[in-house]
Amino acid sequence: MRVLLLNNVPTLYFDPLFEKIRRDSGWHLTVCYSSAWNSQVGWEETKFERHGAAIILDQCRPWLRKKLGSSAAAAVSLAGILIGQSPDYLICCGYTLMPQLVALFWAMLMGKPFAVIGDSNIYCDNATGIRRIIKRLWLNLLTRRAAALITIGLANRRFWVSYGARPEQLFSSRLAVDLDFFEQACRERRDEARALRVKLGLVEKVVFLFAGRLVRRKHVDSIINAALRINDERMALIIAGGGEEFVSLKEIAVDDPRVIFTGPIAPAELPLYYTLSDALVLPAALEPWGLVINEAMACGLGIIAHRHCGAAVDLVGNDNGVALKTFSVDELGEAMKMMINHEPLLRSMQKRSQEKIANWSIDTAALGMIRAVEGSIKARGSRSRLPVFGDEK
Image (cartoon, rainbow, N blue to C red):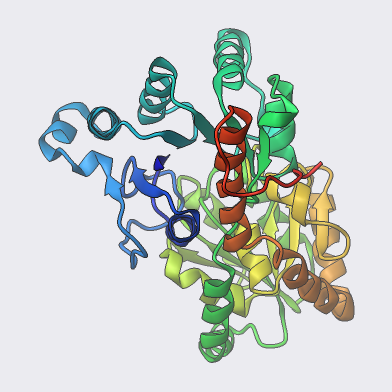
């Protein structure tokens, strides 16, 4: 079976996932990325080792990219591939960008079965006015026509149900990172992290970490303000990342030596900062998922995150951290102080993080996507090679 999978940009975790699907499914799988990188992904523009072959759509016709821009060039290139290869099944990661729209309309016009997967979160579904009307019309159409809707977690599942998804359409493929990569990288960089702790004056301190883009909705200012209110030299805060709020956030920190800014870092450097830290802090609003939570848990960190962050809905509880009910500095500060003042509890949370994330692996995610495709084909009357198991409730 010829399957085409469309995604936005490659990352450290997508390539091993798609290679696992290619090996285990028996499909002829074509993986397409709209672009190699964009400014919204939250890390430095950098190349990393690729795990498998893929087509970078906006690089297929460089002259067209210069003329029309990246998204339009990717859409044109994808249209050519769809017409030329005519895949039997389409897996589309997302449903709003130009290449995604080309893929989905092609599948509907050609009567091809397709699955949609994305990180949409019911708690982030706040469109209003005409945008709300258009969104509902489009998603109602998708849920009627899609062979499968692949859910990455509970908040995502609830999102699709709110747009009329039928139970037989819903399949689970938990959003995962390469656990082996992060666990191994953390082990290999332990000595380097220990040395960096000494260099930065973090020995015997509880180190809190924020990793991601410095934008308003992440509420990084609240993390800094909470840290400044904690009159305790036993704590430190590392802000790893860059973005539009970098300068204003440094002004809030007022040169407090306990608040350290790294600037933008490459994805491959994240394990170093996870290893030298004790807890991840992510009080973000409108956070569809938040893969830094998966990564940090794989590296054995306690987690403080807002309860409506997609990953927090499934992965964060009292056993491994704090799921914040508000975005207040006071609540955030209390959560941080609890971890500072109760080291045995913090160590227990760290251990529990690693235990919980073990079930969110690349292998599990790949099997979920294979079952979604095979199960939806079976539902359409075709022969299935894999059993279909119950979805998460």
